[in-house]
Each structure stands twice: as C-alpha cells, then as structure tokens.
Amino acid sequence: MAATDKPLLIKRYASRRLYNTETSDYVTLEDIATFIRAGREVQIVDLKSGDDLTRQYLLQIIAEHENRGESVLGVDLLTDLVRGYTSQAVSVVPQFLTASFEMLRDGQSKAMDNMTKTNPLLNMPGFEAMRSQQSAFFKAMTGGLIPGVSREPQKTKPADDLETIKAQLAEMQDKLSKLGK
Image (cartoon, rainbow, N blue to C red; front, side):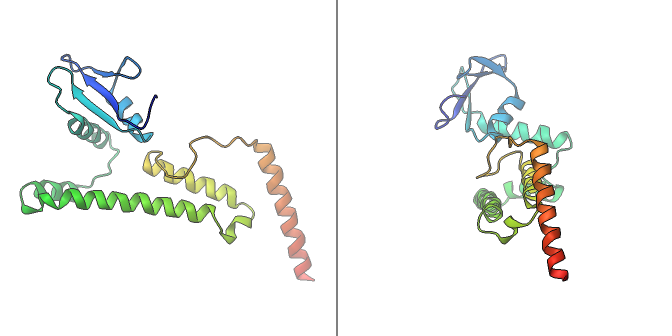
C-alpha cells in the first residue's frame, strides 16, 4: 500500500465492482476489511455521482461478518441501536460508541505497555512465552489491531527458545536447592 496518511480511495463502478485506485485493480469487501484491520483509512465513492458510500460498505462488511457467525454485536446491543434511531438518543449514541471504542483501544494499549515495561514478572522463567500467548490472544480478539505491538513475527528459532528455557530451569533448580539447605 502506498501513502497511508490519506484514505485509500476505492471507486465503485456502475457494475458495482470496487476499484482500488492505488493498485489499479478490483477489490472485494474482504479486501477492504483487510485494509481497515491493517490500520488503513478507506473512502469508497460512487464513480458516476461522486457520493460517499463508505458507511454503506462498512455496514455491509459488519453484517457479513455477523451473518458468518463472527458475532460481536449481541441482540441486546442491536436492539438498542434500532431503538436509538427512533428516539432523541440518536444524537448521543454516536458519541457514546466512539468514546467506548476509544476507551477499549486505550485499555488494550495500556495493558500491552504494562506487559512490556517495568514489570517484575519479566525476569520470571517462561514469562516471554506467556506474553506471546497473551499478545496472540489480544490479536485474535481485535483482528490484529493492537497498538504498540509489532506485526512482524518473532524470528527466534524454537531450539534457541528451548535451550534458554532449559538454562533458566537449571538456574532456578540450583537456587531452590540452595534455599533448601
């Protein structure tokens, strides 16, 4: 992907095909969802009228994921959203949802910061494996959008990890045996 400081422009043709203007190829809704998960802003416009169709397509992506059983929005929440469109709450709901998602992102970021900074558990044997599992869990729960966590896979060899763990275990056993005397 090219310049990520501006939204990726997707044009919808009369045939309803979606065209990525940066790569000059056609894309699917799943491709657009992948761009968004990677942190890219997307703008979808109708080629003929120039109308912004971004909201319509984002809602369609969400609906398809919900229909496939990747349910994030419970029935109670969806019911409340429908009610919000028919009441005076319609002006409050967008700000509330935006603030809630910002708090969720900030909380995830702080949790990851706490896991990686001055934490006494960092010296505990096996902690790195536990942290990578925690990171994988957060990544799975958020579709890969975890602020502050590298998207690059770690380039350590399993044999090196095993040797490190063995050395740490031997060191720990030695300390325990000294404590028992």
